Length: 351
Image 1 (cartoon, one colour):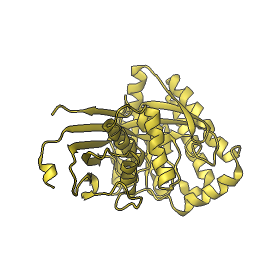
Image 2 (cartoon, rainbow, N blue to C red):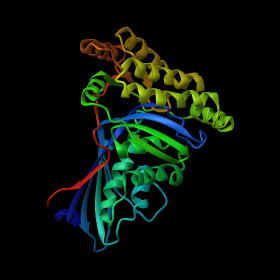
Image 3 (cartoon, rainbow, N blue to C red):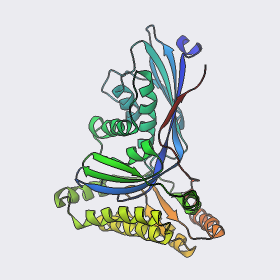
Image 4 (cartoon, rainbow, N blue to C red):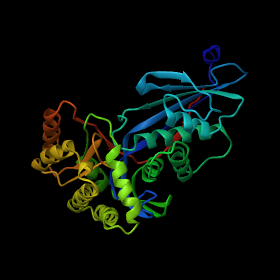
């Protein structure tokens, strides 16, 4: 640990936003074949800081500090056996830290894990983006997204679409077209400032207080969809909500955007009724009573996780809605969000 007492050679910082309101989700998967997804990158973001030292041998070459979990430990990047935080360890191993360097990697996110907001994708995008600065050349945002997706799906063997990583890498509001899994194009949706500010003012993110559970219900849905084929009416119903969302935002038509969010949530329930949980249905009831015009169960849905709400015109109604939601259940929590102007950002601070 004497190595850590010295001043680092470099300190690399990176941040990447999380994702909400993913209309068209489920269509960015291998079994959908092709898809269309609308999503919004927001802060709070995932944050990574890497202190870089010279390495002359001994222990402590690669140290992870997972701040949210209170974990600090060394890893062997040459091993394919993952320990406490497989996503972090696999991402670091995949980036091949130069042999003459030692690093201490600190990861933190204000967004709770398992909130169905693509937090794991934001973490891996921020981590890979920061590690990319250790070697000559720079990966594009698209390349970082695909490297992060590769870690989750190919190295760790997880069921994983591509939209979360792309949203974290690009930020902003996106229309994503996946023409053949996992190949996709990203079209940032450029809107006037007044529309941007109004959307930001109207949006609310409610966390149900429990990590997203993507177990048996999701496996059941996947088993059905993988045999239904890309033209399944259930998948197509989800796809159609993405262009509706894009067009509504270009027109600054928040009513139409809200309807697209509701259509997507109802289409999720058609995949399996438990994808829209009892918690989500109760929060929707409260939101509707306060004049909300739309709601989208984030991510794939299921128990736990979160929901995005598009409120009406009155700011005081949004504040009362949040108060009533948080009073309904001590686990429910509003997470303050701001639309991200940028996606992945990396920089080095002066030493």
